[in-house]
Length: 359
Image 1 (cartoon, rainbow, N blue to C red):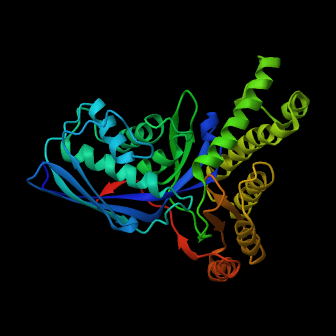
Image 2 (cartoon, helix red, strand yellow; image 1 turned 90 degrees about the horizontal axis):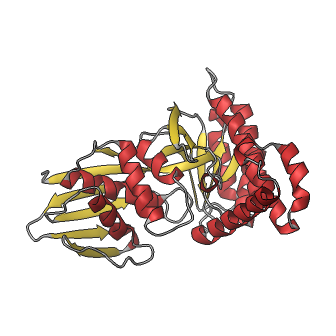
Image 3 (cartoon, rainbow, N blue to C red; image 1 turned 180 degrees about the vertical axis):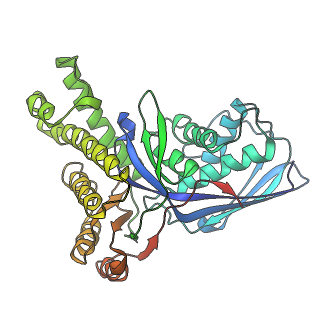
Protein backbone atom coordinates (compact mmCIF):
# COMPACT_ATOMS: atom_id res chain seq x y z
CA UNK A 1 0.00 0.00 0.00
CA UNK A 2 1.42 3.38 -1.02
CA UNK A 3 2.25 5.84 1.74
CA UNK A 4 1.85 8.78 -0.63
CA UNK A 5 -0.27 9.12 -3.76
CA UNK A 6 -0.54 12.11 -6.09
CA UNK A 7 -3.04 12.10 -8.94
CA UNK A 8 -4.32 14.56 -11.52
CA UNK A 9 -7.57 14.74 -13.50
CA UNK A 10 -8.21 17.26 -16.29
CA UNK A 11 -11.19 19.42 -17.20
CA UNK A 12 -13.12 18.65 -20.36
CA UNK A 13 -14.62 20.52 -23.29
CA UNK A 14 -17.52 19.20 -25.35
CA UNK A 15 -16.87 20.28 -28.93
CA UNK A 16 -19.83 18.56 -30.58
CA UNK A 17 -22.85 16.72 -29.20
CA UNK A 18 -23.96 18.83 -26.23
CA UNK A 19 -27.26 17.45 -24.91
CA UNK A 20 -26.82 14.30 -26.98
CA UNK A 21 -25.21 11.72 -24.71
CA UNK A 22 -28.31 11.25 -22.55
CA UNK A 23 -30.16 10.39 -25.79
CA UNK A 24 -27.65 7.67 -26.64
CA UNK A 25 -26.16 9.77 -29.43
CA UNK A 26 -22.42 10.35 -29.98
CA UNK A 27 -20.30 13.26 -28.80
CA UNK A 28 -16.86 14.63 -29.59
CA UNK A 29 -15.01 15.98 -26.57
CA UNK A 30 -11.48 16.58 -25.30
CA UNK A 31 -9.66 16.93 -22.02
CA UNK A 32 -7.83 20.22 -21.48
CA UNK A 33 -4.90 21.45 -19.41
CA UNK A 34 -6.82 22.71 -16.38
CA UNK A 35 -6.63 20.20 -13.53
CA UNK A 36 -7.80 18.85 -10.20
CA UNK A 37 -4.83 17.60 -8.16
CA UNK A 38 -5.24 15.06 -5.37
CA UNK A 39 -2.41 14.47 -2.91
CA UNK A 40 -2.80 11.80 -0.23
CA UNK A 41 -0.57 10.67 2.65
CA UNK A 42 -1.33 7.58 4.70
CA UNK A 43 -2.24 8.25 8.34
CA UNK A 44 -2.65 6.07 11.43
CA UNK A 45 -6.17 6.88 12.59
CA UNK A 46 -8.41 4.98 10.15
CA UNK A 47 -10.11 8.02 8.69
CA UNK A 48 -10.12 9.70 5.30
CA UNK A 49 -9.43 13.33 6.19
CA UNK A 50 -10.24 15.37 3.10
CA UNK A 51 -9.42 19.06 2.63
CA UNK A 52 -10.92 20.98 -0.29
CA UNK A 53 -9.55 24.53 0.09
CA UNK A 54 -10.98 25.77 -3.23
CA UNK A 55 -14.49 25.51 -1.78
CA UNK A 56 -13.45 26.08 1.87
CA UNK A 57 -14.53 22.59 2.82
CA UNK A 58 -13.14 19.85 5.01
CA UNK A 59 -14.51 16.40 5.70
CA UNK A 60 -13.63 13.34 7.74
CA UNK A 61 -14.95 9.93 6.68
CA UNK A 62 -14.44 6.82 8.78
CA UNK A 63 -13.14 3.89 6.75
CA UNK A 64 -16.08 1.72 7.88
CA UNK A 65 -18.82 4.18 6.88
CA UNK A 66 -21.25 2.48 4.46
CA UNK A 67 -23.48 5.43 3.43
CA UNK A 68 -26.58 3.26 3.23
CA UNK A 69 -28.55 6.50 2.92
CA UNK A 70 -26.95 8.67 0.27
CA UNK A 71 -27.40 12.44 0.44
CA UNK A 72 -28.04 14.30 -2.80
CA UNK A 73 -24.82 15.43 -4.46
CA UNK A 74 -22.53 13.53 -2.09
CA UNK A 75 -20.17 12.16 -4.72
CA UNK A 76 -17.41 11.29 -2.26
CA UNK A 77 -19.83 8.93 -0.54
CA UNK A 78 -21.34 7.51 -3.73
CA UNK A 79 -17.82 6.75 -4.99
CA UNK A 80 -17.09 4.76 -1.85
CA UNK A 81 -20.33 2.82 -2.35
CA UNK A 82 -19.43 2.07 -5.96
CA UNK A 83 -15.83 0.93 -5.43
CA UNK A 84 -16.96 -1.43 -2.66
CA UNK A 85 -19.31 -3.08 -5.17
CA UNK A 86 -16.18 -3.93 -7.15
CA UNK A 87 -14.41 -5.54 -4.20
CA UNK A 88 -12.39 -2.57 -2.97
CA UNK A 89 -11.72 -2.78 0.78
CA UNK A 90 -11.00 0.57 2.43
CA UNK A 91 -8.83 -0.51 5.33
CA UNK A 92 -6.63 2.46 6.27
CA UNK A 93 -6.80 6.22 6.62
CA UNK A 94 -5.30 8.96 4.48
CA UNK A 95 -4.89 12.71 4.76
CA UNK A 96 -6.08 14.02 1.41
CA UNK A 97 -5.71 17.45 -0.16
CA UNK A 98 -7.77 18.20 -3.29
CA UNK A 99 -7.42 21.47 -5.21
CA UNK A 100 -7.04 22.73 -8.75
CA UNK A 101 -7.39 25.46 -11.33
CA UNK A 102 -10.62 24.30 -13.03
CA UNK A 103 -13.33 26.99 -12.78
CA UNK A 104 -16.13 25.75 -10.55
CA UNK A 105 -19.67 25.42 -11.95
CA UNK A 106 -18.47 26.78 -15.29
CA UNK A 107 -19.35 23.99 -17.72
CA UNK A 108 -15.98 22.24 -17.96
CA UNK A 109 -16.71 19.53 -15.39
CA UNK A 110 -14.82 20.50 -12.27
CA UNK A 111 -17.05 18.21 -10.18
CA UNK A 112 -16.55 15.25 -12.54
CA UNK A 113 -12.79 15.85 -12.56
CA UNK A 114 -12.76 15.81 -8.75
CA UNK A 115 -14.77 12.59 -8.76
CA UNK A 116 -12.51 10.92 -11.33
CA UNK A 117 -9.48 11.84 -9.21
CA UNK A 118 -11.22 10.49 -6.09
CA UNK A 119 -12.15 7.21 -7.78
CA UNK A 120 -8.61 6.90 -9.15
CA UNK A 121 -7.23 7.43 -5.64
CA UNK A 122 -9.52 4.83 -4.04
CA UNK A 123 -8.57 2.22 -6.63
CA UNK A 124 -4.86 3.04 -6.39
CA UNK A 125 -4.75 3.19 -2.60
CA UNK A 126 -6.80 0.10 -1.80
CA UNK A 127 -6.48 -2.06 -4.90
CA UNK A 128 -8.99 -3.73 -7.16
CA UNK A 129 -9.45 -7.20 -8.58
CA UNK A 130 -10.01 -5.68 -12.03
CA UNK A 131 -7.34 -4.11 -14.20
CA UNK A 132 -6.77 -0.51 -13.17
CA UNK A 133 -7.00 1.51 -16.37
CA UNK A 134 -8.58 4.77 -17.50
CA UNK A 135 -11.71 3.13 -18.89
CA UNK A 136 -12.43 1.35 -15.59
CA UNK A 137 -11.90 4.58 -13.64
CA UNK A 138 -14.26 6.41 -15.99
CA UNK A 139 -16.99 3.76 -15.72
CA UNK A 140 -16.93 3.80 -11.92
CA UNK A 141 -17.01 7.60 -11.90
CA UNK A 142 -20.08 7.50 -14.15
CA UNK A 143 -21.79 5.03 -11.85
CA UNK A 144 -20.97 7.16 -8.81
CA UNK A 145 -22.05 10.48 -10.31
CA UNK A 146 -25.04 9.48 -12.43
CA UNK A 147 -26.43 6.06 -11.50
CA UNK A 148 -26.05 6.31 -7.73
CA UNK A 149 -27.79 9.70 -7.71
CA UNK A 150 -30.27 8.96 -10.49
CA UNK A 151 -29.02 12.09 -12.26
CA UNK A 152 -29.94 13.09 -15.84
CA UNK A 153 -26.39 13.19 -17.26
CA UNK A 154 -24.60 10.78 -19.58
CA UNK A 155 -21.08 9.34 -19.78
CA UNK A 156 -19.28 12.11 -21.63
CA UNK A 157 -17.76 13.92 -18.66
CA UNK A 158 -16.33 10.92 -16.85
CA UNK A 159 -14.97 9.18 -19.94
CA UNK A 160 -13.43 12.30 -21.47
CA UNK A 161 -11.68 13.10 -18.19
CA UNK A 162 -10.66 9.52 -17.52
CA UNK A 163 -9.37 8.69 -21.00
CA UNK A 164 -8.28 12.12 -22.20
CA UNK A 165 -7.17 13.33 -25.64
CA UNK A 166 -9.75 14.14 -28.33
CA UNK A 167 -12.33 11.37 -28.31
CA UNK A 168 -15.46 10.27 -30.12
CA UNK A 169 -17.91 8.55 -27.80
CA UNK A 170 -20.76 6.35 -28.96
CA UNK A 171 -23.01 6.72 -25.94
CA UNK A 172 -25.85 4.34 -26.84
CA UNK A 173 -26.49 0.74 -25.85
CA UNK A 174 -23.32 -0.42 -27.60
CA UNK A 175 -21.20 2.18 -25.82
CA UNK A 176 -17.66 2.60 -27.09
CA UNK A 177 -15.08 5.29 -27.65
CA UNK A 178 -12.30 6.12 -30.06
CA UNK A 179 -9.35 8.47 -29.59
CA UNK A 180 -9.39 10.60 -32.74
CA UNK A 181 -6.65 13.11 -31.98
CA UNK A 182 -4.13 14.54 -29.54
CA UNK A 183 -4.01 18.21 -30.44
CA UNK A 184 -6.15 21.12 -31.61
CA UNK A 185 -4.40 24.41 -32.23
CA UNK A 186 -5.81 27.76 -31.20
CA UNK A 187 -8.45 26.97 -28.57
CA UNK A 188 -9.39 29.87 -26.30
CA UNK A 189 -11.56 29.37 -23.21
CA UNK A 190 -13.67 32.20 -21.86
CA UNK A 191 -15.34 32.09 -18.43
CA UNK A 192 -18.57 34.05 -18.25
CA UNK A 193 -18.52 34.17 -14.46
CA UNK A 194 -22.19 33.17 -14.46
CA UNK A 195 -22.87 29.96 -12.56
CA UNK A 196 -24.96 27.48 -14.48
CA UNK A 197 -28.00 25.50 -13.41
CA UNK A 198 -26.66 22.13 -14.54
CA UNK A 199 -29.35 19.81 -13.27
CA UNK A 200 -32.21 22.16 -14.09
CA UNK A 201 -31.15 22.74 -17.71
CA UNK A 202 -30.27 19.08 -18.22
CA UNK A 203 -33.60 17.90 -16.88
CA UNK A 204 -35.57 20.33 -19.05
CA UNK A 205 -33.75 19.48 -22.25
CA UNK A 206 -33.61 15.76 -21.60
CA UNK A 207 -37.24 15.35 -20.58
CA UNK A 208 -38.53 17.40 -23.53
CA UNK A 209 -36.34 15.59 -26.05
CA UNK A 210 -37.41 12.19 -24.71
CA UNK A 211 -41.09 13.21 -24.74
CA UNK A 212 -40.79 14.28 -28.37
CA UNK A 213 -39.05 11.09 -29.43
CA UNK A 214 -41.55 8.93 -27.53
CA UNK A 215 -44.50 10.65 -29.19
CA UNK A 216 -42.97 10.06 -32.62
CA UNK A 217 -42.27 6.39 -31.86
CA UNK A 218 -45.82 5.85 -30.66
CA UNK A 219 -47.10 7.01 -34.05
CA UNK A 220 -44.25 5.53 -36.11
CA UNK A 221 -42.67 2.48 -34.40
CA UNK A 222 -40.07 2.27 -37.18
CA UNK A 223 -38.53 5.63 -36.26
CA UNK A 224 -34.88 5.35 -35.19
CA UNK A 225 -33.28 8.53 -33.87
CA UNK A 226 -29.74 7.41 -34.70
CA UNK A 227 -30.70 7.13 -38.39
CA UNK A 228 -32.88 10.22 -38.63
CA UNK A 229 -32.26 13.13 -40.98
CA UNK A 230 -33.96 16.46 -41.66
CA UNK A 231 -36.46 14.79 -43.97
CA UNK A 232 -37.60 12.77 -40.97
CA UNK A 233 -38.02 15.97 -38.98
CA UNK A 234 -40.18 17.49 -41.71
CA UNK A 235 -42.23 14.31 -41.96
CA UNK A 236 -42.84 13.99 -38.22
CA UNK A 237 -42.90 17.50 -36.76
CA UNK A 238 -46.66 17.91 -37.29
CA UNK A 239 -47.19 15.10 -34.80
CA UNK A 240 -45.67 17.17 -32.00
CA UNK A 241 -46.91 20.13 -29.95
CA UNK A 242 -45.08 23.35 -30.79
CA UNK A 243 -43.23 23.30 -27.47
CA UNK A 244 -41.48 20.02 -28.31
CA UNK A 245 -40.55 20.66 -31.94
CA UNK A 246 -37.29 22.52 -31.17
CA UNK A 247 -36.05 19.64 -28.99
CA UNK A 248 -36.84 17.11 -31.70
CA UNK A 249 -35.09 19.23 -34.33
CA UNK A 250 -32.04 19.74 -32.08
CA UNK A 251 -31.74 16.00 -31.43
CA UNK A 252 -31.61 15.24 -35.15
CA UNK A 253 -29.56 18.18 -36.41
CA UNK A 254 -26.93 18.10 -33.67
CA UNK A 255 -26.39 14.42 -34.44
CA UNK A 256 -25.89 15.24 -38.11
CA UNK A 257 -23.39 18.00 -37.23
CA UNK A 258 -21.45 15.66 -34.92
CA UNK A 259 -21.13 13.07 -37.68
CA UNK A 260 -19.85 15.74 -40.07
CA UNK A 261 -17.34 16.90 -37.46
CA UNK A 262 -16.07 13.33 -36.98
CA UNK A 263 -15.24 13.16 -40.69
CA UNK A 264 -13.32 16.43 -40.41
CA UNK A 265 -11.30 15.25 -37.41
CA UNK A 266 -10.37 12.03 -39.19
CA UNK A 267 -8.82 13.82 -42.14
CA UNK A 268 -4.99 13.79 -42.38
CA UNK A 269 -4.86 17.53 -41.62
CA UNK A 270 -7.50 19.57 -39.82
CA UNK A 271 -9.62 22.03 -41.76
CA UNK A 272 -10.03 24.58 -38.99
CA UNK A 273 -12.37 26.76 -41.01
CA UNK A 274 -14.67 23.79 -41.67
CA UNK A 275 -14.59 22.65 -38.04
CA UNK A 276 -15.27 26.21 -36.90
CA UNK A 277 -18.29 26.47 -39.18
CA UNK A 278 -19.71 23.27 -37.71
CA UNK A 279 -19.13 24.65 -34.20
CA UNK A 280 -21.12 27.74 -35.16
CA UNK A 281 -23.95 25.60 -36.51
CA UNK A 282 -23.99 23.56 -33.31
CA UNK A 283 -24.01 26.68 -31.15
CA UNK A 284 -26.93 28.22 -33.03
CA UNK A 285 -29.03 25.16 -32.22
CA UNK A 286 -28.01 25.28 -28.56
CA UNK A 287 -28.92 28.97 -28.45
CA UNK A 288 -32.03 29.16 -30.60
CA UNK A 289 -33.66 25.74 -30.16
CA UNK A 290 -32.54 24.52 -26.73
CA UNK A 291 -32.32 28.05 -25.27
CA UNK A 292 -29.35 27.30 -23.04
CA UNK A 293 -27.42 30.55 -23.47
CA UNK A 294 -27.58 33.87 -21.61
CA UNK A 295 -26.85 37.40 -22.91
CA UNK A 296 -23.24 37.49 -21.68
CA UNK A 297 -22.48 34.17 -23.34
CA UNK A 298 -24.04 35.46 -26.57
CA UNK A 299 -21.92 38.61 -26.41
CA UNK A 300 -18.73 36.61 -25.83
CA UNK A 301 -19.48 34.36 -28.80
CA UNK A 302 -20.25 37.29 -31.07
CA UNK A 303 -17.08 39.10 -30.00
CA UNK A 304 -14.91 36.04 -30.69
CA UNK A 305 -16.33 35.65 -34.20
CA UNK A 306 -15.97 39.36 -35.00
CA UNK A 307 -12.33 39.18 -33.89
CA UNK A 308 -11.64 36.41 -36.39
CA UNK A 309 -12.38 33.10 -34.64
CA UNK A 310 -13.13 30.19 -36.96
CA UNK A 311 -15.97 29.20 -34.67
CA UNK A 312 -17.21 29.47 -31.09
CA UNK A 313 -19.77 27.77 -28.87
CA UNK A 314 -21.07 27.48 -25.36
CA UNK A 315 -19.68 24.57 -23.34
CA UNK A 316 -21.65 22.21 -21.17
CA UNK A 317 -25.27 22.06 -20.09
CA UNK A 318 -25.78 25.83 -20.39
CA UNK A 319 -27.36 28.66 -18.49
CA UNK A 320 -23.94 30.19 -17.92
CA UNK A 321 -20.46 28.72 -17.72
CA UNK A 322 -17.83 28.99 -20.46
CA UNK A 323 -17.38 29.38 -24.18
CA UNK A 324 -14.65 27.95 -26.39
CA UNK A 325 -13.40 29.68 -29.50
CA UNK A 326 -11.36 28.04 -32.24
CA UNK A 327 -8.87 30.72 -33.19
CA UNK A 328 -6.21 31.16 -35.86
CA UNK A 329 -3.04 30.98 -33.78
CA UNK A 330 -1.87 34.43 -34.84
CA UNK A 331 -5.18 35.91 -33.63
CA UNK A 332 -5.39 34.18 -30.24
CA UNK A 333 -4.40 37.32 -28.34
CA UNK A 334 -6.89 39.56 -30.18
CA UNK A 335 -9.71 37.03 -29.81
CA UNK A 336 -8.95 36.60 -26.10
CA UNK A 337 -9.07 40.37 -25.61
CA UNK A 338 -12.36 40.59 -27.50
CA UNK A 339 -13.97 37.88 -25.34
CA UNK A 340 -12.74 39.63 -22.18
CA UNK A 341 -14.07 42.98 -23.38
CA UNK A 342 -17.47 41.36 -23.98
CA UNK A 343 -17.78 40.57 -20.28
CA UNK A 344 -15.77 37.42 -19.63
CA UNK A 345 -14.44 36.92 -16.12
CA UNK A 346 -11.28 35.17 -17.35
CA UNK A 347 -9.90 34.17 -20.75
CA UNK A 348 -6.96 31.87 -21.52
CA UNK A 349 -5.65 29.51 -24.19
CA UNK A 350 -6.11 25.78 -23.58
CA UNK A 351 -4.61 22.64 -25.08
CA UNK A 352 -5.68 19.01 -25.37
CA UNK A 353 -4.12 16.81 -22.69
CA UNK A 354 -4.17 13.21 -21.52
CA UNK A 355 -6.66 11.75 -19.09
CA UNK A 356 -6.28 11.13 -15.37
CA UNK A 357 -2.78 10.09 -14.35
CA UNK A 358 -0.42 9.69 -11.42
CA UNK A 359 2.06 12.51 -10.80
